[in-house]
Length: 221
Picture 1 (spheres, rainbow, N blue to C red):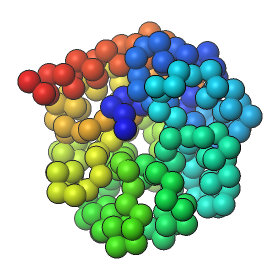
Picture 2: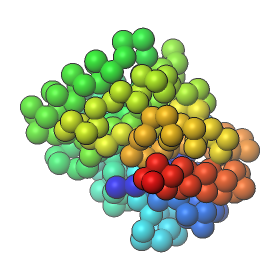
Picture 3: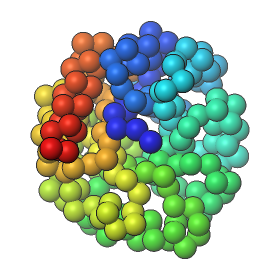
Picture 4: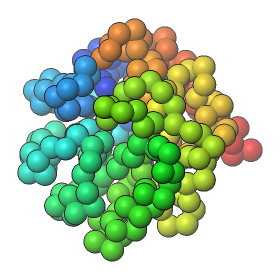
């Protein structure tokens, strides 16, 4: 659905800068404890200002399924990103709405992720995409730390699993290496292109998008 996503957008100004830089998707964070949290009214202004081509993703952490459905439908987002401890049954409760399921890759490796996706497949609620982030105690994301790329590149995306989105500590300086190592379908960053939490640096966003595009193009050749 996208190749380059900039998450944690909190203003129309930042959203337009991301669109102008050529990114494919933005993330709107509704997690109350995040410094990048945005309320539904502000999110509506952001989505209304964006070109139609931009994929709009609503991020939630352990929210009630009914609330997730309500907010996502109200904003007409393209994807619901689940970044908490939501079990496979939770995805089934979303009534077929497309999801991006985030996982924190730790010492247990890919096994728990594959088991989770297998259960989703059994329930008929396989996510549209899978995101791998780093596992940092006490954090659901936004740590600025990369996961183990060597482990992440073993994700079996060609074996019936959803396309992989790589996140965690990605910056304009390392995104090309990350793409060349892991070969994900897409990349996602938030803190890696900020001047302060929740405030995007347009120059960093542009550099990130350019580096990612070049790396994706190189990986095809």
